[in-house]
Amino acid sequence: MSITAEARLLQISAASNPSSKWERVIKLEQGVYSVKNKEKTGGSLDIRVPKDQAEGFVNNKRERYKFRFCKVFDQETTQEEIFENIALPVADSVLDGYNGTIFAYGQTDSGKTFTISGGPERYIDRGIIPRTLSYLFQRLDQESNMIYSTHISYMEIYNETAYDLLDSRNEESRLEDLPKVVITEDAEQNVQIRNLSCHQAATEEEALNLFFLGDTNRVIAETPVNHASTRSHCIFTIHLCRREPGSATLRRSKLHLVDLAGSDRASKTGLSGHLLTEAKYINVSLLYLEQVIIALSEMNRTHIPYRNSLLTFLLKDSLGGNCMTTMIATLSLDKGNIDESISTCRYAQRVAVIKNEAVLNEELDPVLLIARLKRENQLLKEQLAMVTEEQRDDKLTMEESQKLEELVKAFLYDPDPDVVLSLGPDMRKIQHCFSLLKVTYD
Image 1 (tube, rainbow, N blue to C red):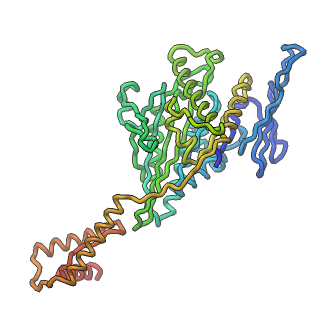
Image 2: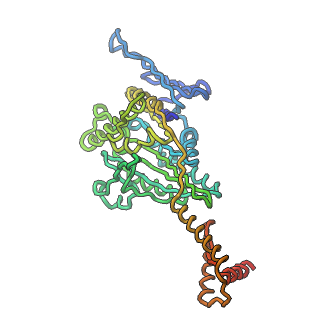
Image 3: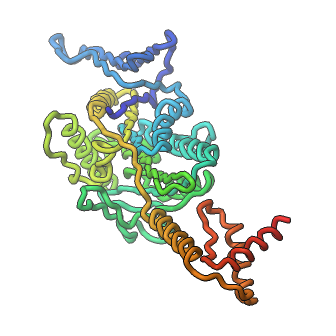
């Protein structure tokens, strides 16, 4: 299974003119960008860059670049279309028990955060995260025959240090004073995360509140190209666990929604001081991410450098393991950004070559299994006692009657369909409980 790569064109200075149902041609000062989407072959982005006459008559600079993706979205595409084409298939697979990841990659001010999180002003500008939460809880409400639990975690990687965005101390403490999230590996080479809180969300409203809380704690800053640039990589994770009533088989799945920080070229943006330090950390982590992707795309590669950065270590399973992964490459085709746009397209095409093996995450819950075996053992003991032991004829005491009444009430009002009313082999208690049930339902 290949990682899916999609491209989204944002921040284009000139309006596009639809020439047909499947094609848009966008004419700008520095060239012509044409977008084609076909149902069978996917989408293509054609970039034509006219030669600069100032560079002389002899100029061998390449004039045309053509890239193919699963789909290409232009600036006219709505957030709803993005969700339905990109996030909806991944969300469905997560509900079925598979791991999923969606991450946005691109230069600063190309629209990554807008695509993943959405715009703050209009409801229709909601991004992939709030729309995915809404969809998942709608589906969970419809499947009333299943028992679900949903948990949310939200992590930020800033200057190569990971922090919990849902830590209650975020508003009261400086970022450097907060406990660091520690990422390690167990004996089976599975990634383990410590100091990252995981909050239960029983409703869509609770999940959205956690998302909004984490968003307010993100590190942002004003840069020469973006007045509210996100200066960190953020990973919003939805953990799902489902089982059928009475079954000890669990399906555990997780969905990573990743907003990567954009790269800044210091020579072009004029960054200095603290912003320059942030940009260096961002660029280094994106460089290591590119090295991992190149290594994964090469045949017969024995070592993948996941440990070079926290980001690649955390996304180890998503990039080359048990996960259905989709990459969104966001492009800013304004004047002067053509080199970065071409670089992003090449990056996305390398990602699309990676093969992942997603498997169903199904397991037996040891707690449920042990509880069931204990109940079965107790029932067998009681059945054996009823056959072999002599029954008592004396009446129940007042204390025993009151105890039985409490047991019956607890049994009737317990929502667990697997609850058992255990009375032992004493027929006096059994008959008394039948009498209580008869009075209750008369």
